[in-house]
Length: 418
Image (cartoon, rainbow, N blue to C red; front, side, top):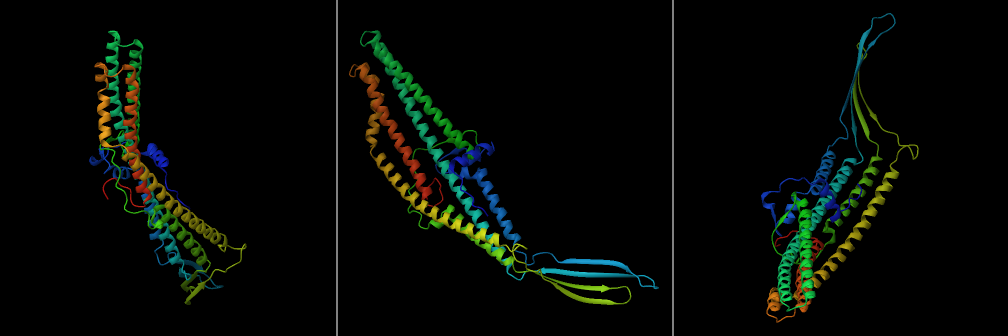
């Protein structure tokens, strides 16, 4: 078999966008949370269903390799009219039963090949399931982050609108320059655009996530809480789906080469016959047929097929070693990324975030009571919003890093507690 590549996130999404059925999700998947989004996405995935069908097809080849005999017995019957000079004609007939036998162990080699191919297809399905769960969780956190950003931008829009009203009232009464009222109005318009952009990002993320679960647009609930950190990394890289798939492919190609070698052993065909010539002469007998081996290129010796299978086995082994190194590197990189994102989030103390939110709400009041100059309000408001946006971004980045760390650990990716 040829190597089957694990679907990337873009490949999985493209397949889902073109072939996902627009059917209603099961009741448990109508609202997606961190705990159920991975299961809902894999349950509704046509890509995973395709991989599962491929695994079942490979199991069919295992069943096809099980029969003891390489072919059915052949029964031949012939009849004719026998005549002699001067005599009357008589009925002549012949019945023969033949059976082909494999003596070179071809059945065992075919079974080993079929089992190795079936194992490779199962690992492909595991890899597809893991990638779909990873992509669904990433999109889920994208949607939750966009919703939090939209809530923050709506708050900022309300604050900016109130600041604009206060500054406009001051300008009308001569308490502030007209230009400051214009700047405050521009700030309110900019806040509206920021809110619309955040809502657009949220709708896009929910739409993409909806295709994973068979909905026009997903409904999400929850908070930006990262996945539990895996207790350990990939202890045995060969257990990773992409590595295990290539190891199974290597075994399959070696079994294929062995199958071709055993096919060089000629199959015997045993036959038994009974014959009557129509003149009271009956013959019982048997026979053996053996194909004559001829050298290459006069006849087929499977030398080219054996060389090809051996080369493909070596290629699968090299690719498995490459994937093993990539798995170790991915785990190390994911740990570094997760730790860095956790430290970045720890820099945002809950008390300071709460104080920043309160200060943002009080800007308009401070201007109205003339404790804050209108010209300073825009700069202060932008600084407060940048801090709160950075807080949401840090939480979002840690959630995404936790998904990548879970994927790199080699364990099944799922959202709930382990």
